[in-house]
Image (cartoon, rainbow, N blue to C red; front, top):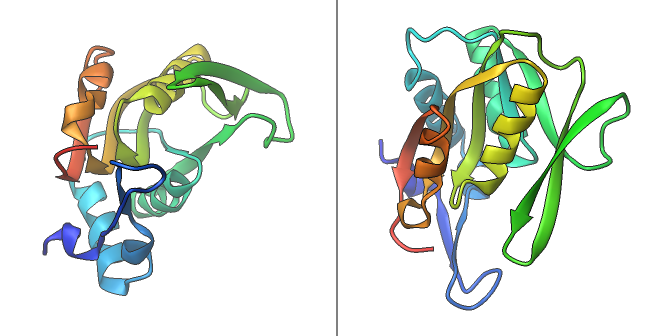
Length: 175
């Protein structure tokens, strides 16, 4: 099954020249959603992880389902100010400004091996921030998987330079 059959492309969103890859159509399809989750799980067959982390917001949907399939707990990587307990934060650069992700201080344990999940990897900025954040909490992201990869934007290389295996279900040329 070609996972791209379930992904809608919206031209010029959020600005002219961008081809937005919309996975809400994938999530809304029983066959597409199952294929995506089964595919993400299959990418790591035989690997050992202690937990799955997902990046807000689509990474929650995908990562939660992957964690369930693998019989593991789930770590939400949230935007600043969304978690109610003690947090650690990681700020990262955006095209115009900065953003911040957070996890609870007790979300992971020293030495844990974490699988990071999100819907898309482009420049790798958010994923790299999540990796650094989880590392500062004492755990190690040893694998990262995405439904979609935009290879021209270099996110894979950013994570691989951090010694993380990067896998994706499909890729698209361009932005």
